Picture 1 (cartoon, one colour):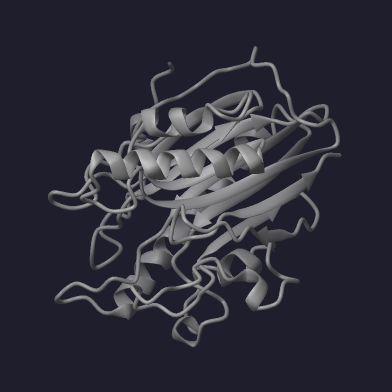
Picture 2 (picture 1 turned 90 degrees about the vertical axis):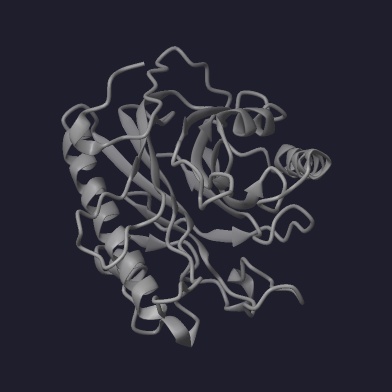
Length: 298
């Protein structure tokens, strides 16, 4: 483990895994992002048996998906991610955040990256907005620099979970949107710095950002929000750009949810061509569906 620079305020886990043996296909890799909903358990107050049930269901689904890169959100710990990914040969946690309890009496909502590929470095960190928003930004992001099978190529991978749409007693939707927009600004700034640093050693740098952004380009409620639009303005490719509205729904909704069906989970890429994302309609594991993207290797 390598100490993380204090200025970045990383949460934990820097990994150097140059000797890791990759089992990915030579011509492409499969990336998946999934908000697993208070994993394991699906609820903040889940009993042990409920945690076991969700773990088993998630393992069954992940074994069938068999990703090469797995981004997940709302996970409790490193141990939970390690147990989940153990069913996919070669897939191991690279970075898991340690953001602490999501609220008083609630378990953590951490973000994580697991992969079969060699990880050069990685860490997790809080957003650290330095008072630029009315309220502190929750959670943060996980980052990993992953060596790709193609010669002299590196993939910068980010797992994110932005501010939800829940409102406090003195907070409205504009506050939530402003918090997500600031997170987006911080994230894109971090990517720019990492591209500059790693481009000194690698000829080709690709970027993969995935996770639960808690906002949509389809929903009228978010028509003025710039969280996602800022990525496309900066030249990133949105994975759902060519998918129909119904084909990009990641939260199908239910009678227990106040939200209508919506697309909150996204992939953005840079330097990887125009890979398309698709929703995997797997029920019974989380209130979110996983999203898959296949990246062609060059």
